[in-house]
Image (cartoon, rainbow, N blue to C red; front, side):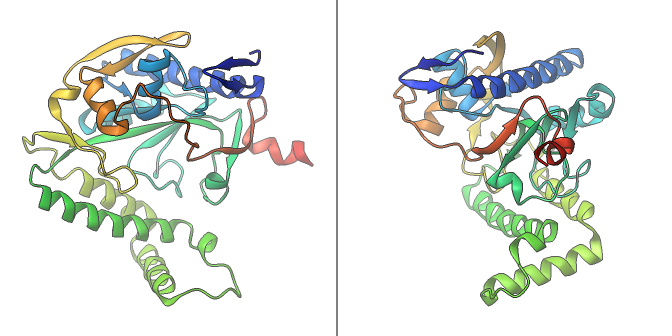
Amino acid sequence: MEEEVRCGCTVSAEMKKLWAVELDLLAEFDRVCRKNGLTYFVDSGTLLGAVRHQGFIPWDDDIDVAMTREEYKKLVQVADREFQHPYFFQTPFTDPGLVMGGSRLRNSDTTLISDFENKRPYKNKGIFIDIFVLDHIPDDDRELNRAKKLLKRYWRVLRYASYYENYFQPGKRYPVKRILPGKFSRLLKGIFGIERLSRGYESYCSQWLAQDTKRIGPLECERGKYAYPKEWHSGVSYIPFECMSVPVPSGYHEVLSSMFGDYMVMRRVSSLHRPLLFDAETAYSRYADKRG
């Protein structure tokens, strides 16, 4: 837990506390997957960190994992039984207001508030790891592009429907191109409910599941630019990551190259959800009391 310098970057003692909670979440996720025979892979910056640093990228502050839609469906079936307090399996259905095609595993006895998190209406704001889903995607690029465009519109509807008030403050003027989709989304939410809208989004992402497509990838609009040949994720090997070993896809070199180009060249980038504050020792539900 002591401050140290890695690759010219100072990793503070506070960041080490955040890492420790995330590693514990990853260990719990790994335990549940091993127990139930589920396959997953570390993903994105975590995959890069595992291959290049045998641990966290020194300026990274989160952990990402991914699994195929088939494996994810199995995880959902056992999650309520397997993840007990302080672990919380957060999905659009266990904590309405979360808008994503996958889920998060959170530690409810901790707090993480970022600018991104602060605007979201879901309740649990403990430190988390992201769980992304790799869907079967169409082999025809034109069909894939059409699907992505539709999902982007669907995503916007879900976002406005889930936290309309965060986007439209009383007394403030907004362009019509934002107001009309917002009002339409609220109408859909009133007719169908947010859970049904979320299940529709998930169902659309899953529609090629029964087809023997040659590619998989994250379809949800914020990560939908990646498409991988299935063979890149056809096997798993374990490599060191901090104090544990983590699973990487058999084609990790190809995956990382498609994401980062020459991934062994270090380029410092900002996190998408840089914390405004985090507390590894206080539950998010009690944090307001502590601050008061």
